[in-house]
Length: 173
Image 1 (cartoon, rainbow, N blue to C red):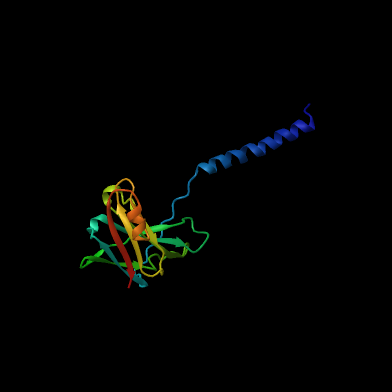
Image 2: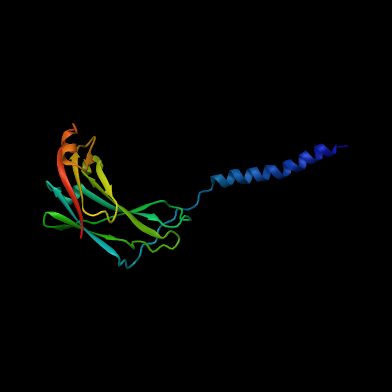
């Protein structure tokens, strides 16, 4: 005859083993990624003018608008969209949509502009600016191995890395 203690242990194991198995299997299941829904008719816009001296062709410049969720239940922390460059003389004009996404789950809001220079290096020379920060100027030294952008011209000139220096101005219109 079986003791009461061993019977209790066996019953406990019958409960624990299935629970552990379901927890392990549950850890292997991945939730499908959330895809933010684009707003079919965005209306809230900000316009920027990008001036680079000496000039770079549009193929050497990449701009992304980055958005963050305003709701904590959103499964994503950030999304980005490419911002097309519209030539305007030697400059580029850009349109950023503040209401780019129509996604009630996340409530996306525009958070920053990311600018990358020098396609050959994978846009290794890059910086970002926050919206509403007024006109921004960066001094960028293009170097395929170690591109860098700084706020002051003298700092970039003192930085001992080879490469062409470009003044990059971003002006909100």
